[in-house]
Amino acid sequence: MQGKILVLDAIATNRIILKVKLTDAYYEVVQADSISAGIRLARSLTFDLVITALSLPDGTAERLCRKLHAAPGCEHLPVIAMGSGADPERRLAILRAGAQMLAKPVCDTLLLSQVRSTIRIHNAAAEWRMRDDTSRALGMAEPAPIFERAGRATLVAPNPVEGQRWIRCLRASLGGSIRYCAPAAALRDAGLDGGPDAFVLVQPEDPQSPEALRLVSALRANAATRHSGIMIVQMAPDPGLAAHALDLGADDVMTDGFEPAELSLRLRNLMRRKQMDEQMRATVRTGAQAAIFDPLTGLHNRRYAMPHLQRIADHARATARPFAVMLADLDHFKRVNDRHGHAAGDAVLAETATRLRSNLRAMDMVARIGGEEFMIVMPGSTLKEASAAALRLCNDISGTPFRVPGIEEPISVTISIGMAVGSSKTAGSGDAPENGGALLEKADKALYAAKSGGRNKVRLSRPAA
Image (cartoon, rainbow, N blue to C red; front, side, top):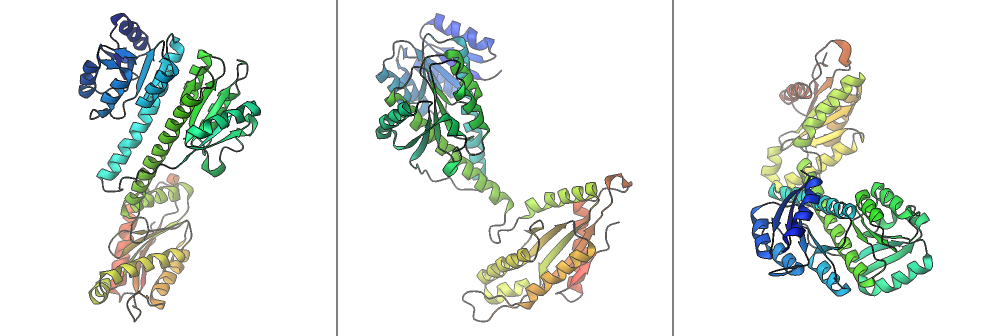
C-alpha cells in the first residue's frame, strides 16, 4: 500500500466513489461521516492524509482542521478539502486553516497527483522531524530556536510586463521580498544568495509551452534550489499539465490564474515550510557533527576514527599503497590537571590538537580517542615519511611550552608516540586483509614501549607484513 487515507464525507456515495479511486491506486482507505468520528479514528490509527468534504454534519472543513491539528499526534497530518461552490473567501479560509483545496469536479489524474504530492511532502517532513527528535533524545543537539526571517520569492513569467504587475500586487501582502525573473535566466540566477525560499512559475495559456514544467525538473535537480518551494500558476486550467507538474516535484498548483490574495497566502505557507525544513536540517546536521566530533578540541572522536581507520586500511590494500597509524599520548598529563586545574588541562588539550593538525597534511586524520590520547592516520605514508612526521610532532609539543590564560608560567608538556605502518600488498596477494583494529593494537604496544623507554619518544612497531 502507498499510504493510509482517512476519507470524511456525510454522503455515503461520495465516500464509496472516492474509496474506489484511491483503492485502485493502492491506497488503504478508512471512512467516516463526521468530524467527531474522524477525530476518533485519527487518534487511534496512523494516517498519511485526510480528505474531507467542505461541510460535514458537525462542522466545516476548517473546524475539522482546527480540531485535528490540536489532537496529540495529529499536529502535522495533511488535509485536502474537496467540494464545489467555494467562493474566494471560503478558499482562503480553508487555506488559512491548514488544508489544501481541490474544487469539484476534479479529474482523477489531478486528484491522484495531488494525493501523491501531499503524502510525499508530508513523509519527507516527518522523516526530518524524526531525525530531529532522535538527535535531541540522544543529547546531540538542542531544539533550534524558532526564528522566522522575511521570505524570498522569485516569480518566473514569460511576459515581463505582466510579471511586474503581479509583483506589485503581491508585495503589500506577501510579507517578504519577491522579484521577477525571465524563464531563460531562472536557472542562471537560481543560486544567487543561496536561492529563494519559493518560486512562482507561470504556465501560459498555450498548452504547447512546457517551459514551466522543464523548470520544475531543473530546479529540483539544482543543489541551490532543490529545497525551495515551487508554485505553478496556470493561466488556463489544464488538469493534465497540473498533475504532471506535481509529479515532477511542484509543491502546489493554482489552476484558475492569478488571484493575489490566494497566491500570497499559498506563497507564505511555502516559504514558512521551507524555513522550518531548514531549521530541522540544521538541527540534525548539528547533532550529526556532535556525534563524531570532540567538542573540546574540534577533532574527530573515537566513534568516527575507528571506522575511518578501517576504510583507510581497505583502500590501502585495494590500491597497494602503505599507510601509517600513530597513537600519541601526553606524558604525565594528570600532573597538569593536579597542579594547574582542569581548565588549564583543557587549554593544553585544545592547543595540542591545534599543533598536531598544523603539522600534518589535510588528508591526514587526527582524532581524540581518550582523555589525553590522540589517533593519527596518514594515508599513503611510508615508514620513513611517517617516522619523520612523528618526530616532528614530538619536537613541536616539547619544544614550545604551553601558555595558558591566567597562569603566569608556561606549562611544559611532552608527548609519546607509538606507530605502526600498514601493508601495501594488494587484495590478490594471498595475504590476510589488513585490519585497522589489529594495526591500532600494534601502535598501542609501540606507545607502551615509548612510555616505558622514558617518554617524549617515538617507538615503531614492526611494519605489517
